[in-house]
Length: 343
Image 1: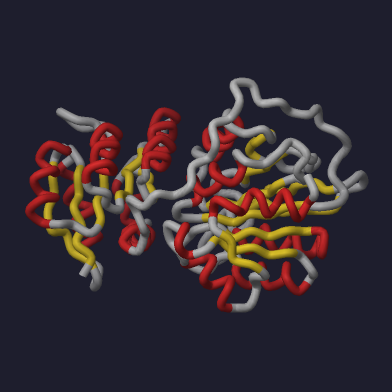
Image 2: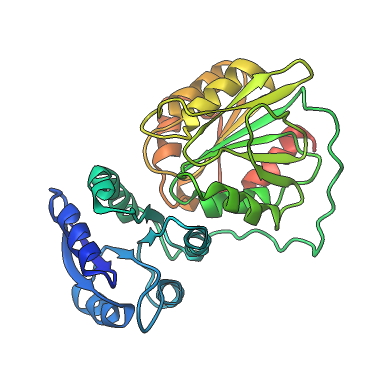
């Protein structure tokens, strides 16, 4: 049984989350706490496997508690995020500090009832995550990264990256090491609407390549990474002057939108052997079959190795179906992409 500690100053939220957790056959709530100060003692007494953590609480906010927890006693943490711009910013901070995933706080509990299965899946994913290990960090960027002015739309190489649980940090490590001469990079990171624009801006501030949220119909340029908008699919299409992007509200694929499968399959069809596919850390199997399409089309395919993954699920599945040409530690993926593209 997965032992869960719920930390939230709202009695209603504590009760709701407790009902979701205790309704699962493989997990149970071992304690609840109205603030982190109380939670510290509960962690010592109950030794939980996973913590759900609200942000705004009395006596100590969630970010301060998370920062201290990851130094003293790292545990898998799933954040409870408010659906506001400030909430998204705090959530990004929490993921960078080591939180495994987040759950959006609904405007009414009826919305939460509909997402009970997703909440349980996120807790299961967190339970299997590796936390507290020393993972490679992105090198500190120059104060003012040098970037090239955009040229014509790309017509040759293209890189597609898929990620889920643990992907926020993994993408930061990879993208921050890429030089401005890279081919366009298309990214499907499992994330809901309202978070990816901020995520892209935070990456853009530390990278030598440009990083932006993808827009439907725009051309794909060298030296730019395009993040699929939260809650929408990203695909590559061939335009009159080169590659361009398609962003749609089509139904979820493999329960995800954006879906790695949708992105990889489109790249396999359009770029063929000129593509490179990269599967980073994540729970589940999204993108594995489409990565096999990439491999069959002649693309070079890379999976992050198990030791550096927060959750090895997506890379493991891609490897198991024979879709992966090489398995590479996270800290070496950027170097391999530079070598493969000659950037």
